[in-house]
Image 1 (cartoon, rainbow, N blue to C red):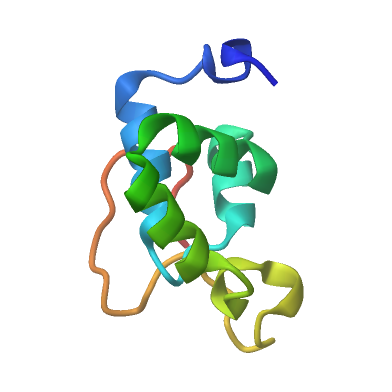
Image 2 (spheres, one colour):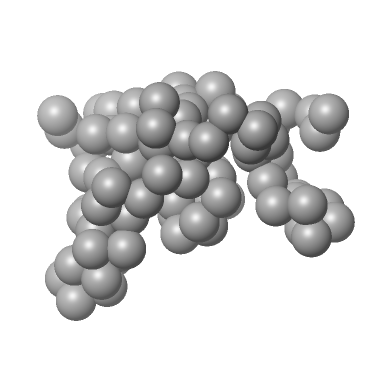
Length: 96
C-alpha cells in the first residue's frame, strides 16, 4: 500500500482518524464508515504518522481490545462514541 491510499484525506481528516483510533470505544468499523479506511489501512496510517514508540504503545493498547473490533464487541454496545462524549467535531456522518 502506498501513499495514494491516503491521498483523499486532508490533514484534518488524518488528525480525526488518529483521534478516533486512539479512542477506546470507537471501533475500526466507524473509521471505515466515515473515511473508507479498513483496519489495516488505519494501522498503516498510524505507523506513518506516529513516532515509533507511540506506534508500539498504540498497537499494544489496541491489540485484541473488544471495543475496537465490532465482531468481538459486546452486543449491547451499538454506538461509535462513549455516552459521556457530548459532541465530536469533524465527523462526516451525523450522530444518531
